[in-house]
Length: 390
Ligand SMILES: Cc1ncc(COP(=O)(O)O)c(C=O)c1O
Image 1 (cartoon, protein in one colour):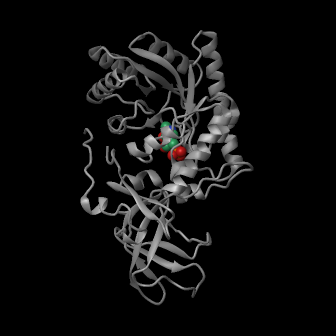
Image 2: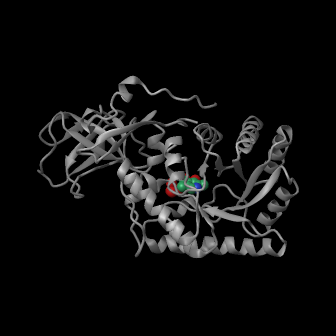
Image 3: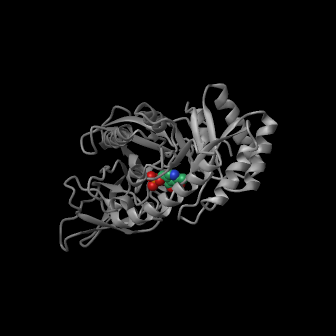
């Protein structure tokens, strides 16, 4: 399904310039100051290390946040679906890597058309492949439109999801890609380890990524002996990007969650010197029912994804006051952390930090962006989730 540009409803656009109190509930809110600080920290890190930063757009699915990332120093964006790539391109993003396998002829036709469109305005499209059949199908689609595309061979470095095996199988696939030049341009290796991102201790993440780096390094060495040195090695997420950077094997990183963060990532223990990112994504919610032992807010799992756990209830002091229990589709049940401790009152606002940012954003058509903080800030903008559902 292709993406239609979204028209912001007047009730939402009327909020711009007004205080956070005027935001109705439940609503997805981004603290822009926190998101900007997160972006700045990541951009400074990659600049210091001489790494290319290509943040993952599957997280925010929004051209506005993609533009903000480019202004801060990113060289392009990743997406996971063709629809996300089309939405970002429609919002002015010229350099997009679909870091995923696409094999259906209809979607490959859209890939080819998008590659053509981006090329015509000085940009480029890239795609991941992990099979000879996938390469052949992509080549056929590109041939029909007379366009060219950058191709990354995805290597499975431990997640056991997509990706060809490291070493010789990867070399064989690179050769197959190279046979289809110039319409397929061999761009390098895509080596991402999703399973390592949420390993809780720094030691576990280090062990997983040290093994992954060995596999990528060995593959690169084989490729070099064949005269097929990868122009780029891309990968990494918010949990491990400092490992990839330290390995010297990757020269491009593609983290996504760092911009907004979520309750799951907050549970990762930070290692020495590891960059801290702040919570920037919240569901604004209101207490709609109160009793002596618990209160109920108006945000359930229609407002936030629960695949990675329930939300945290934000506290301005940083000390959690209330816990969130699942109340179903439209409700959350709050208890005091300290037995007998004070609870919010009927009508009060509570701010939830969702368990998992990507699928939470995908539940909403718009994000209300706030500047000046959650307590005293003002609505700065309404941002459409351009690629919601695609
Ligand atoms: C291929 C790929 N790269 C990068 C990322 C970004 O990871 P994170 O959002 O954990 O930073 C993801 C997330 O799932 C991904 O699938």
